[in-house]
Length: 481
Ligand code: ADP
Image 1 (tube, rainbow, N blue to C red):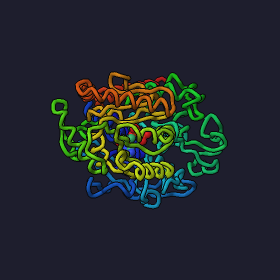
Image 2 (cartoon, rainbow, N blue to C red; image 1 turned 90 degrees about the vertical axis):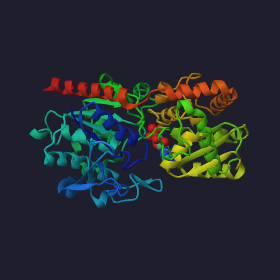
Image 3 (cartoon, rainbow, N blue to C red; image 1 turned 135 degrees about the vertical axis):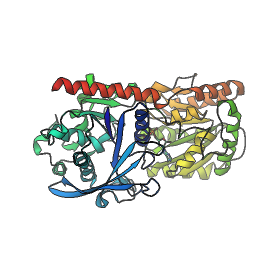
Image 4 (cartoon, protein in one colour; image 1 turned 180 degrees about the vertical axis):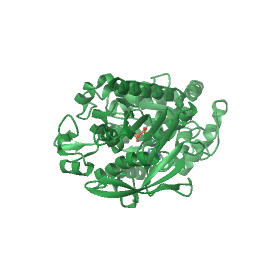
């Protein structure tokens, strides 16, 4: 199959969250299954053109945006260590900025225009290059318009016939909503401003361009694929998704074990595997030292996350003083809402021997935290898949999670980790206490670590499920012809 994966972020070029991990790893696994898979993303300033050997392949492709013509240059590289081609859409006005979507927590005001440009440039580039995919797998609202364009503005262009589409949603909470008048950026007329198309409570929501028009829809875990059809998790789109429920699937993300593996990890202090698990302790000592924590044998809980309510920081905030009085240490790495930055800085001041606080995005430190922690906390309010718990498994770090979405699908209470159900500070507290209790039995704890390290969440299995999904999309568009 010829597959194009369109994603606004891709590891290792540009990342803000789990989507980037998926978009970097899934193509590798598809390539190993011998598919002709390619990836396309914007060329943000953070993309290191020298390190990854980007070369320009097209100059000045014309892209209509909001009644004007903007120009896209196209660069090519490959996913490191593979022959998977990666295309970058360059336009300095849109992507020559410090961040991907926002500055200091505020979205760039022209995001609708930027990602309209990206989506349309993808199609204009395909046509120019002559490479016609069988499947376009678009990811999240930033690339959803690609799907809608195929079914609207480009539907009579013979080059684009028989391309099947899959829309993958990684988080329902991000919908790409913009004021109604921004519809003019998309060159789609007002006839699409209705609830069966882009309109959403008086605005436009670009994510609907995917949900309404894709042949097949998928999310990143089976549990989340059901949850998004409920009022609690659907973010107002549950009705639409219910109406498409026959086409909705859930596939748990895999982990790229070439990148996430304590046996090879270049960022940790002492490498280890299941047989040399005791060497993990050296990473704990290094992590304690780096965070100014005393070198004592108490459980160390790591947390690496966007600091957002979705991730459970409101219940954690409610309980944090109590947690600080338990016999444990805590290391946090994250960035996000200022109220949480303040909270954790205050905790560090008050409990310097109990908590290490690292505010920022730091991929290398993240790896040391996965390796050096005994437990990994994800108290999410909702969690489409979650990667932290899967990465933790590989590092022998036991997850403590709330039973929601992909966390519910991948963590079993008492067997692979500690799970709590009610979204409350007391349920969270109780789960942490159970984990601390269990940690006291060294023999059992070591068995638990070894069991977790042996779990297989590699992409092999998930990539095969994606292939099945693509086949479903192909079948669906054949039916329509
Ligand atoms: P989401 O995509 O909702 O943010 P996931 O659990 O799916 O959550 O993926 C988060 C990914 O981002 C993981 O690989 C995690 O290690 C990483 N990550 C999150 N915050 C940071 C940070 N501040 N520094 C480094 N890596 C981070």
